[in-house]
Image (cartoon, rainbow, N blue to C red; front, side, top):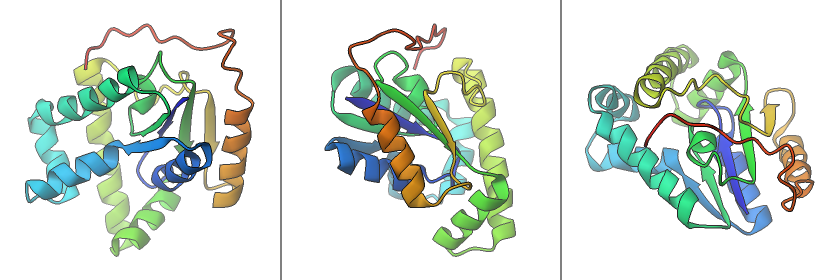
Length: 191
């Protein structure tokens, strides 16, 4: 089984993806963890590395190629990244999008990173705008187009356990023997 979990910063992707991977006994591969480790290896903060990625498209492209290769070559994996639904467009059994209002996400990020909410909100808005522009420029992908996702949940509306339960039921209800209704993405992009 190949699952993808996508969404903006602070939407609950990492927590939910880890729990889903454990529930279904599959490997969890996080694009965010890879991106953060690359930033740390090079001595940058996440915000600084994101700015560098605006100037050096190979940073995003390398990360995206790695994730796409995993989607093509492996089964029993959950890919978590902003673009994982697109990267595994034809391979994924179930593509999940998680979201929440910016104010909720900023509060979560501020709590996680020990910074003021206002700072987290400003940084998050800037990061999202930067990523949106880069994905359009690099791949002609409009990250706000949610039509490729099988499940989309506003994580501010339910607690963590309920979100998890809803997703488990959705994944368990997936009929892997049926291609009926399965979205195929006609992509004009190359990672």
